[in-house]
Image 1 (cartoon, helix red, strand yellow):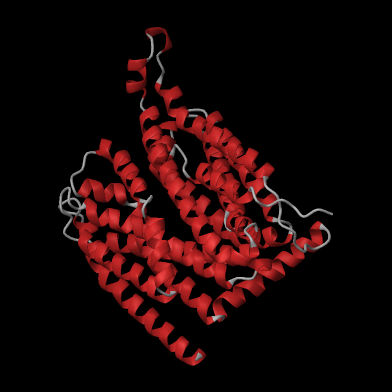
Image 2 (image 1 turned 30 degrees about the vertical axis):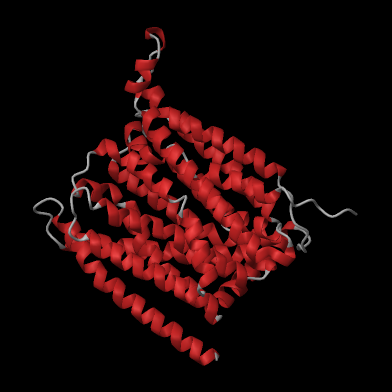
Length: 428
């Protein structure tokens, strides 16, 4: 029986991750739901539902990818993405219970889709590379993917923001073809639906690398749960993976929390709201250069050193947020956002090098679950910190929270690196 041709999988992985992650509705996601008729409290609840869905299915989906097959999970992720976009397209504006039900279904489907794709895409691409040169080939593929994702992010941010507002579109259209607000507000969703169809087409063309799988769905599910527990135990008892995941989690949680409140920070440094999308596009353009820098640093230094660099850069950026300089305050924001890409490259490279092929997707899902839990806990702590300080004058609470998170982060990082050194000494 001829060997499966895996040569096209890396290219398909790049296309999938760009169209899957760089979604055209990202710059208007919050106001998209609010303009449909939801309240802000309902939107926050939807995000909680989305996060909870991912947390519940992140690791089981990775184990199923390692048992049933990565291609099947990716096809499922793309199919769920199509369904979640249809929910938003069909959601009636001001539709009461029907609107809420469709939006809840959208968030559940989105969370399931994210859980199915997480880990399975990278694992399939990694195992499709030539076995004798996988480490170097993966570095090149990961760098290429990050660059194309940056381009996709720039296009999505600019396009999504522009087509959501009917005013500039109507200036270009004849008087008989003017767009209403309702139609314009659905355009970013329609674009993402097209992206989902591209993802589905690409995943259907992927080829599953040869592997041992359990016979039967029931046996596969049983094997998946067993693999989940074994892999989680391995990740958190193996000193090398433990250091990568825990230190990466500490850096990711505080920087990603800032990424979710950037619009509040931009308002604090007196930037006009119309500029937010273009700022996001500029940060996406900077992401083009991150993979090359990350690749060079990871070739030159070990994983712990690169994690130390990411922690140091994050500490500098977080400290520079405190003065909230008008306009110049953009510099630390951009520094922090690009650090996420560098950290992601370092963690991914380290875990791929340490994980066995039979449980690679599960390892990545365990990492994803840990990172999401860390992000959720830090966000909860940050919200309590904000509530502790009075917000008079406006922005005072955010400034105070920025100030107090710096020594807390510095202390946690110092303790973690001290613990990592002790683990290394024991292993020696």
